[in-house]
Image (tube, rainbow, N blue to C red; front, side):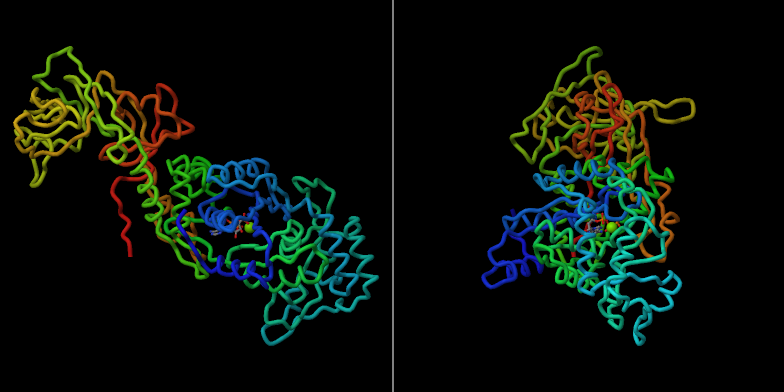
Length: 555
Ligand code: ATP
Ligand code: MG
């Protein structure tokens, strides 16, 4: 692994060094997704930081479903999250937890705070809450702050027992009503909610707020470093206050890093869910989605995504990364590993008029020029072929080095040299067939006499053995560069042309039974992946993962 370092690693090194806050302890992190959607590429950054940091220091990382909030959660998401993390190559061993499993302990810690005079039951209505909140110059107020702790204890226990309606009472920490940090102005720790919890059922009608529950969950699990995104920075004083004031078994340290943003996409489960629910994409795993399952279906490899996360780095300042850089990381990986294959996406017939009718032979084609160990394969060749329609012009334009009547000699990849002699048209004048002659002495694609070949090397598919396929070409889901911006209606930013479906494409024979999920480089056309859902024997479907040309410019 490449030696990486960043400010988080620096903090941790200090912490575990002799005399440090966690001297001699094993580094322990956690990844806490809320199971209300599928993981997206932003979560990958957090995953690589949480699991990757633990790995780097020989530590461990827990997986914890943050189901503290009783809002809609689903076992479908819980399972998908685990599958995605394993696919990326991370593992939590037996340390899989649910935040809601700590509800009883969290409740006990709340009682402890009341006992210590550090929390009280407040009865401000939501309107009063806003009114008494104060501002930078005015402290907040609550007439209930000095309620005797016996009374708070009694009320809080009765809140739990379900004696009061929603909104009637809250439990608040007694910290500092004049703090410049509003999170410290006696934040709410518990509220009443009559809502069924997906794991706890109706056992609870009071639920802890994230800011109270999260540090407690971290501390119970023995987490040393709670790594989270920047929006929690202002909550860190509260995090520290909680672990300092309840008798949790450890005192984890929270460190924040910048969230990942990518241009031309949205990274918010709420927005992604909307796209799914409105039927604007085919599902969470639509290959245009920035979800892990979408990227995987599109053809992204786990290694390319982890490389991407490593290389964008970890910083404290938010920045938007180009989608092109993610594609660049994929190309880099597939360029080394993907099998080369020939597929004609917009086919037109080509007849080699001087090749004997009824004859067929096989020619040898390299599987991957970048990987000598990948070897070669045999591809059928005969008189009737398909080539890419755009490789022929009835009238050449300047610099066109492909097929046109009496044009230059072109190389059919791995097979023979041909020269176009003409074409056949239908009544409307459209070209239906290209005619060419081959040089029988050029088997393998090189002239016997060493003459210079002036035309291009073209990909082709044998008509008799080739397989029909559907190919899906994708471009950005959003036409706007920053659809995630707060002032934009992201749905209005959708790109109406993000999907182009081609049917009647011609693939070389072996692609007909490509394993779903397998990646290939289609010669001259890009990187393609056999669709894991819709591809079936006899009906191959391929997704374009990335075009061949790298639009990403460094620097
Ligand atoms: P979303 O807005 O997409 O729902 P979230 O932060 O609410 O994101 P969680 O499931 O709570 O989603 O996130 C789990 C972890 O992933 C958190 O620690 C969070 O900080 C991190 N995370 C989420 N989105 C990003 C992102 N774009 N970049 C980096 N980390 C992220
Ligand atoms: Mg969240």
